[in-house]
Length: 295
Image (tube, rainbow, N blue to C red; front, side):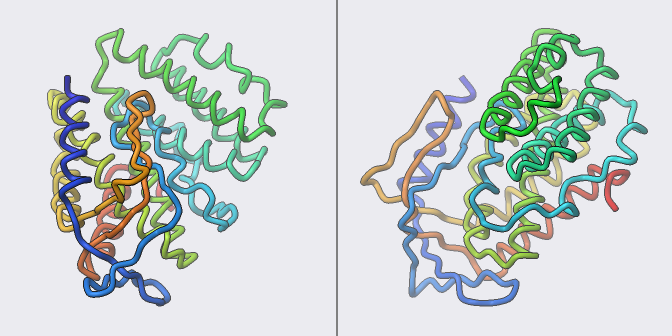
C-alpha cells in the first residue's frame, strides 16, 4: 500500500510541478536561470521507490569520468564494526561501492569490497547461501561488469528478503539508507571534482528516491539509529522541496516493476544555492553516519 501512495504522490509532482533551470558554465557552481529553462534531449530514468541499496547505482553511470579510487569508502576500519545496525548501513554502502568498482572493471577493488561484504554478512549471521551460492564468490567472475550488476542486485535482494522474513525490517531500511547516501556521495564527488553539470541535474532528480527512503524509514522508528538520522533526512527533504521538476508528457513512461519512470526533463527550477546546500548536506550526512570510515 505504501508504494502505491508513493507512486501517486510522485505522479502528482511530475505532472503539476514546474520550474525551469539553466546551468551556466562554472568550475563548481550549478546556476539556475528561471528566465531561460533548459531542455534535456535524452530520456532519463528516475528511480522513485527503493527496494535494495543498489537500485539507483545507474545514477553515476555513463558520466565519462573514469574511476576515482578516493571516492568509495576506505575499508581498513570496516572490520571494527560489530553493532548490527552499523553493519546493515555498511552493507548498503559497500554494495554501492562494489557496483561502482565493477562499473569500471576494477577487479582487484571489486574483490576487496566483495570480501568485506562477505565478512559483514557473516557477522549478521546471514545465510551462507546468499553469498556462497553467488557466482561472484568465485573471484574469477569479477571481470564481466554487466553480469556482475545483476548478480549484486540478486545478492541484495536475498539479503533484503532475509531481513524482512526474520523480523529485522529495520536492518533492511538501514541498508537502504547506507546505499542511498553512498550513491549520492559518489554523485556529489563527480559533480564537484569533475565539474559535470549533468550530474547536478541527476542529484536534483533524487528528490523522488529520497521521498521513498524517508517513508520507509518513518515506519521503522523503533530503531534508535533510524530515529537518530531521521532529522537529517527530513532536513534534506526540506531542501529538496525547493526543487521543482517537470517532465515532458510525450514519451513519459512509468514502470511499476522497475519502480522507475522514464521521460525527458522539460524544466528544473531551483535557486542557485539549492544544489550546493544539497551537496553539503549529503556530505555531512555521510560523515555523521560513517565517522569511522571517512578518511
